[in-house]
Image 1 (cartoon, each protein chain N blue to C red):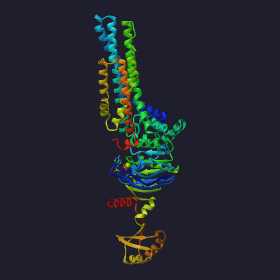
Image 2: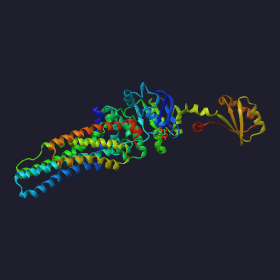
Image 3: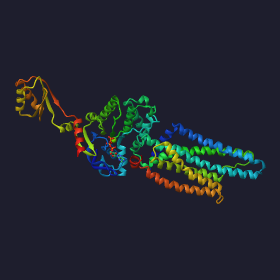
Image 4: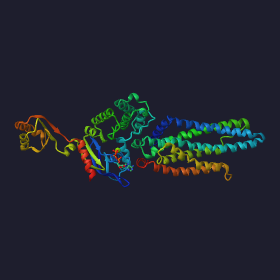
Length: 309
Length: 250
Ligand SMILES: Nc1ncnc2c1ncn2[C@@H]1O[C@H](COP(=O)(O)OP(=O)(O)OP(=O)(O)O)[C@@H](O)[C@H]1O
Ligand SMILES: [Mg+2]
């Protein structure tokens, strides 16, 4: 649904996005992570036909972002939540949405229906006639999301939808994105919140001017290091350590306090036998747990590597 | 260009203006004040001088003053947009509402035309109401004192029919260009106000010089304004481009 090939954007001497090649499938939720100034917003702006690209290719569906006629079609099928909500503070929530509904060419009846459905879903319907200026940040953000959905777009670009929101408002927004995911919207989500990316996204891309990694959250987590098994013992004795070292499936062992940290390729398959071996060697097992690298570990490592390059 | 799209944008802007007291008071107050004040001064000065004058002399003086004051309405039509358009363009820039607007399936020209229309309509409308009051008051006076209706006259018709809207357009266009460089509504208003300086100069020259008949002069001024409008139109259009707005408007 979204496809880019060597997409590049320069601002004078500064390269904001470099050779970005990316594919987001229909119905997929794609998370775009990256530090400040990584080029996330610039990418989204190019994909929404808001700013031009310097070189490369970008398509939404069958439409090219650099063709004037295609751009109108792209803007029509795309919903966009910008970094700044940009609502008209002196107009009511309803009027704001109505205005955008008209610009997106939603027929009168449908427009009324959609506004009512969205505002009810987000719990703002009762306050629809209040000026947007009277709302809290979180509510404004919700109205802006409703605005992005007013024309039932196939593709949705959300630029940091939960930035500046309190935990509860963030959760409402996140739950809402999950609803949209069920409805098979294609969603491109810029975020700094790794937890959010992990919960919502099918795949994640990490950008720092260039794309430095892309994959499903679990894939990325595994890419850092193998999952490790940790065995907590009453006490680590020489016999136990020896028995574990003799165990074929174990690639490495590290002793930390009264714990053994083991590296294996197939822990699910080999752990039962491992436990029996430790028990046979006289080890008193308290817990057996799994140590996973988090998305945060992966992210920080990749970003640091990118910096030193 | 789809006019319907521009009209959606224009009506939105108009409903924003309606809620802004400063804009509302300016739109009602300035033309109303001028519509009453100008004929008031005019009548007062004519009454003061009328003693030694014949009917014909009085009519001539009245006509001269009418033509002199008619030009003030051009100034109103040029000043009002600096108040309104600064809210419309710089205001929208400050609210950061241009980006989602630019993301809609609307062309740059449609947006620009819609926003300009929203500034133009109330300004010209208010000026026309002001000048209508002016005409009525002057005529009531001239009919009772001189037994004739002195207004409307051809000079007034050209000033109000052509020069006023053209000056208003000039002012709106200037504001679009200024908005791309300025981040403060007050500053935009002050710089925008400079547009009236050349106009003012032309008006003073026009009403004092004896080279051309007034009507010819009004036509020349209209022509010059039309050319200036066209030039600024291309400049405004080049300024109001998605790419420019999102990357260069600071
Ligand atoms: N209009 C512009 N003119 C010049 N440089 C720009 C412009 N817009 C963006 N940049 C630069 O491009 C780079 C990428 O910016 P961008 O806003 O895309 O980053 P981002 O990943 O969205 O960051 P953040 O997480 O802070 O939102 C930055 O270095 C920024 O300064
Ligand atoms: Mg950004």
